Image (cartoon, rainbow, N blue to C red; front, side, top):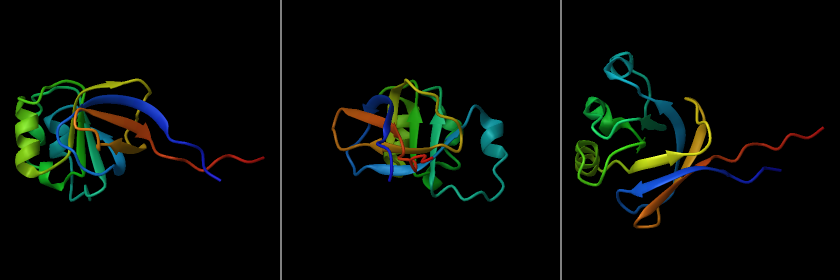
Length: 126
């Protein structure tokens, strides 16, 4: 038996696509990108705090998606995301702690608003 997904936030949906599941990973600065040593990023949903986080550009095509707590549809990150066809949530308001390594689901079917859910987890039975 599994529990329902938990709402963790919402933001501006950069482009409509299917829901995406992956593993959250926070990138705070350039050193976080430079420290990647052949890590498999195919399941990584990058979380960043600034809309101009162009330091993601070297790994952007390898990411599953991006969630940014700032930015607009005209920001550098939005432009790079569209050019690389990487789904992106901008100006995200995160209402629940999302640590690196947390499974998340991005709901991207609405043309304006994306929602961020913590992925379903196995229910604890006693």
